[in-house]
Picture 1 (cartoon, rainbow, N blue to C red):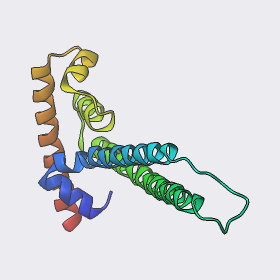
Picture 2 (cartoon, rainbow, N blue to C red):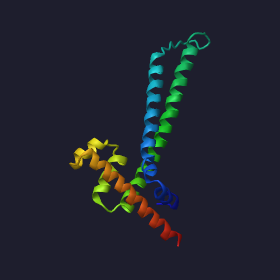
Picture 3 (tube, helix red, strand yellow):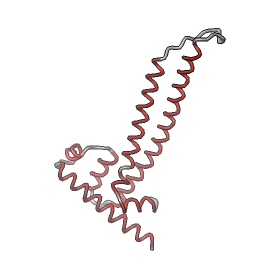
Picture 4 (tube, rainbow, N blue to C red):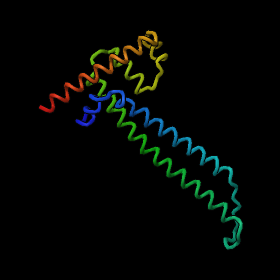
Length: 157
């Protein structure tokens, strides 16, 4: 865990924990764009002819090539985003384990920020009501912030 990450957690733990969600949203948006390009590429019909000098087939073939290039570029971006997401999730899990002592708090934070569960799902899995889950979440954030501040102050000495 870097000093910069600890500082971010000590100032706003929720913003740090939401980094993974933002990354997942980016990946999802890019996947939608890939699907859109695939549909476009599939809708283009290409007539290939033996005589490359004749006009007609080249324009459509260029459209298909352009679509395929865009798909490949986006898929490479998605792969890079997934690698970044894996690192973010590893950092979030480390922060939860480092700064949270209460197992209930850990469970709530992991389910919310690593699994992306709603308050209702978390409550049903932990056998708590949604209101109590939200209160546990708030207490977990306070504990995380306090412990990160302590860690940050100790490392500054």
